[in-house]
Amino acid sequence: MVSILKRSLAIITILIIGYWLAVAMSHVPFGQDKMLVGQYYLNHVKDQTGAINAVTAIVVNYRGFDTLGEVTVLFIASTGVGALLWKRKRERTARVPGSVVLTTGTRFLFPFIVLFGAYIFIHGHLTPGGGFPGGATIATGFLLLYMAFTVYEIPHKGFEVTEGLVGMSYVAVGLIGLLIGSYFLYDWIWQTWHVGTVGKLFSGGFIPIIYILIGLKVGTELSGIIDNMLKEGVSGND
Amino acid sequence: MNCISCINYIIIGIMVLSAVFAVEWRDLLAAVVGMAAVSLFASLLFFFLQAPDVAMTEAAIGAALSGAVFIFAIKRTRRFETEEEEKPGWWVRW
Amino acid sequence: MIEISAYYFGAIALIMIGLYAVLVKKNLLKMLVGLSIMETGVNLLLISIGYINGKSAPILSEGIGPKQAVDPIPQALVLTAIVIGVATTAMALSAAIILYEKYGTLNIEEIRRLRG
Image 1 (tube, chains in turn yellow, orange, green):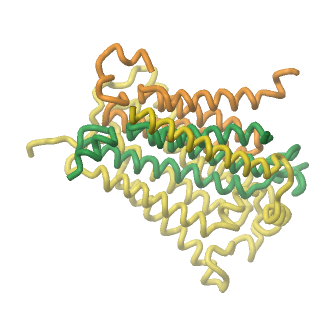
Image 2 (cartoon, chains in turn purple, red, cyan; image 1 turned 120 degrees about the horizontal axis):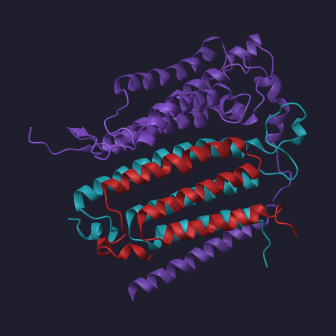
Image 3 (cartoon, chains in turn blue, yellow, red; image 1 turned 90 degrees about the horizontal axis):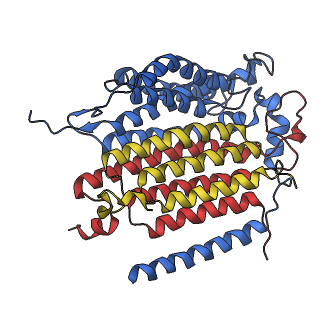
């Protein structure tokens, strides 16, 4: 009885919230030009950053400090998963090995998945994608390895070292901009030298460098989250 | 009215329907599959809304990694929403 | 009668369904499923605000000038929010696993009763 009362109260609350949202959104016209700062970015993205993909330029160049904060949040979440699920002795508990189709397909497909992820984050300033989807694609490849083989584990030592080094070099690339007399995360490659032509692979200033770092960071951290979620603590007597 | 131009209405309808199923199914494994379906259709809508970057990210993360993380959690806890549904025969109904 | 676009309607419907799961359901994992659906709805709402009729993706290759592209800022926001979302969801799931190992149940009313 109480549960029916509670449920109907919740439904009434949700309907009121939905009505408010609908009324608010009915004043925001769909599909019409509402850009203010976005138009400025679109007008100046080619000569200010050297990138073609405006989304990438905003994520890395115009709002690079924001992205550094996001990467920090990702690092903290990954560390939190590791800390919450910490046990003295942990191992994988999968008993059923993958079928022949799964193991053979994984052996065949894994290099191509990693290659595709690397392609996505190296070409982030030219094509859709960038560090975040590329890193997620690489993590999906490691997920496939975990699914297929019962004893597989990621190389923990190398992954932790890569994670730390990549995070440090993101800050280091930002600090170089500060050292040459400008602000933190200043695009020192494009603004001072104009390396490369717009539209080719070697262009875009420090966007490819930062996105390679972000791709490696996201890939290693999501793989670490998968590893931590999958391994269970064993209650051994030793 | 041809149905090529109204494909986005169909996809929005399927997306909302799978969201309702994801919330209402009592088998948590099926609910997670419904959630992954919501992410997949949302990624199609992102592509229709001219956001290919977001569509790629949502397809890689929402449909693959998020569902995998939920399935690992279900593997370490229990599969059904309430305790009395663990008995066989219950999983046929919602 | 309010008139809103179909994309707005889908996004608001996803937010409402997720909120219903968070408020009504008692299973912790089901509440997290609802939270994840709500996050997808919010992302869809942001992207559909940035859409402009007849314009194409903000990739300024040949033939696409600055006047023919949609708003890139919501896309840049949502791009990072999705990746952060899965990491924080994984952290919430690990907390749920810890709760299950300690109390042996995922029902939040049971967990509340067992406190003390």
